[in-house]
Length: 120
Image (cartoon, rainbow, N blue to C red; front, side, top):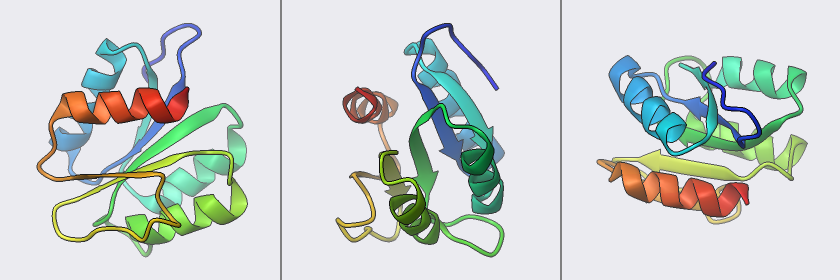
């Protein structure tokens, strides 16, 4: 976990290590604290144990048994107060499961801007 004091905590869910590292570092540089995981199962474990997560940023295509859409649906059901920002290069989520969507390849500044808006 990369943490800044008094910064909103973002959970990044991305199975591609370099993509995950890139967006994590960009978010930290933008003033967020970040926890990063490679799959939805680990994301759910963190959401169950940490009550300070202020936003989830997830890709749709993930390794493991759940994809990003299923993760977003579980978050909306179990933690409706946590905004979900979804990204994908192939699919667009239904509006009721994602608070915002950014298509891949994304501009990092667009992700940061949306994350600021949603975490506020």
